[in-house]
Length: 152
Image (cartoon, rainbow, N blue to C red; front, side):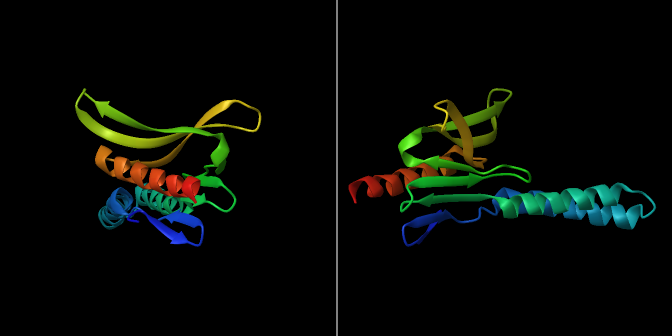
């Protein structure tokens, strides 16, 4: 398990520090520079606020596969409402890649498609990264976890 930590029959995704630490570091650097170069400006207050929101948003993220209760729990973003997806209602997992100018990859997401309690199809983002290979590795690990659950 490279991306998940097993705790009994629960698999919790490890924090992915890569892009978030870069973004938070960049905003923190801009905050320090704006405070030292223009202390009378309110720009550093806005940048400090954005840095704090980014940190809170990262700390609120959660992705747990619980094989005892047979569901997946996901929560993304600062104000993101968590989703609980029953494994029986899971239709499939897909990889979405966003490219700019036709060849520059800006975002790759792993999307879960499921049926909610009202019988409607819904989609939610499980994880995102900058490379398709990382998302594919995470998808392979999820399929391995879910495959072991069906065998056991």
